[in-house]
Every structure is written in structure tokens, then in C-alpha cells.
Image (cartoon, rainbow, N blue to C red; front, side, top):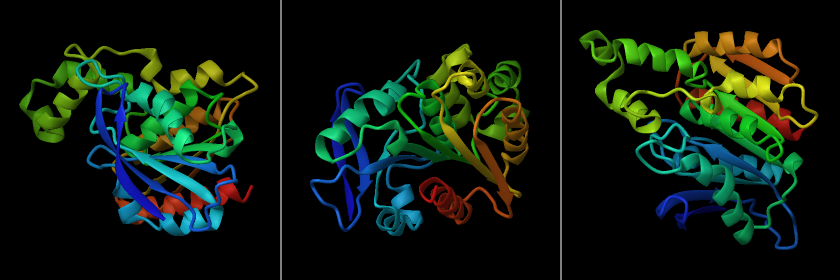
Length: 261
């Protein structure tokens, strides 16, 4: 069953779109495991429902999938914009638990995303490991955010940089991180991972990337860095580009690993 609509967010101070997929055998007296599924930079809350086999997976794994809308925010509490990180990690779970029979247990809670959504999933789970038991990130962007911000700060005004990345993306980074592109350790994935790697409560993480993907080198490097830390971490690569042909296969593999544990 696919539910599409909007909710009013007090955090965002506006209506925001949401898509929810629940199993066809939904029972009111069950407590369902839940997966928050995050969209990419150019996407919206309906992308995963429209471009993947998600309704099949919801029935197969008896799981509720929740897909929020965050625009081009990079899942941050933006410098010039809304507090999307707070919305995703605090208000959204409360809203959904008040409507659906969703388990509150971290072992029943996953967060998943592709591209910008992969970054968002990693940021959320590593910031709040007590909340999310599992994280799956596909072809993630911004894995080395400080380097990206430094690069834009140094070369963002040049024509070559604008031609390569586009003025819209340059403006997106300024909206999210400020005109001066301020770096904060709370936005850096490996810093967050190192902060919790020795804790007893930490998420299990699955990551993957297509061999032809533009973010492959960063994802390979991220894999090598995560191997040095004390995480239950799996990384895979196979033929694929930055599109839903790859993302749907990645989701299929991730859910098989996650729910057939």
C-alpha cells in the first residue's frame, strides 16, 4: 500500500511532502520494523516509490518504509533555510509513530539513502546511534565534506569550477553551510564514525557504489577508512552508474542483508 501526502512540520514551519509504503497485510496490533528512505539532491519524497521495487520489499520484509522530503538541504540544519536534520531525526519519527504502529526499538529501525541521501543516512545514524540500528548508503556524496568545502572556498569563483559543478550546486552549499562555507565536525562522516567507534551502541552499516559511478573513488576511500574503525561494515561494488538501475539493485541487496540476518 502506497500513501502519498503531506504533513505540517513545526520544525520546518511548513507543509512538507511524505510517501509511506506499508505492507498489504498491515495489522493494527502489530509493531512494525521501519526504514527511513532518503532521496538524493535532485529527488523528492516519491522517487524511491516510483523508481524501485519498494512495494514488493515492504511485503516481503513486513516493513514500513517512510520517505520524507528535504529539498537540496544535504540533510543539514541549514544556515539559510530549514532545520532538516532536526526534522528527520526528531520530529519525523514522532509524527510517524503517532500514525503507524512503528516499533521504537533501534534494532527495528533502519535509515537508508542514495547519493545525497546516502550522506544523510550516514550522518543521521552516526549522530544518533541510539536511534538507528542499521544504515545503508549507496553511492554516497560528500563523504569527505571538509575537502569539498575547502575546494569550493578556494576555487568557487573561477569559471572552471562553475562550469564543472554548476552555480546551482555552489548556491546549495552556501545555503546549507553558510556564505563562508563553514565546516563543522558534526557534518563530517568520518569524524562522526570515529567519535562512536569504541562505543557499545553503534549501527551496522552497509555501503555500495557502482563501478561507473562518479562518486566511486570517494566511496572506495571511505571503505578503506571504515575498515580501520571498529564497525560491523560491509562494502560492495558492481557494474553500475549513478541511477535507479543501480540504486534499486543496491536496495535489494541491502534489504536481503538487513532483514535476513
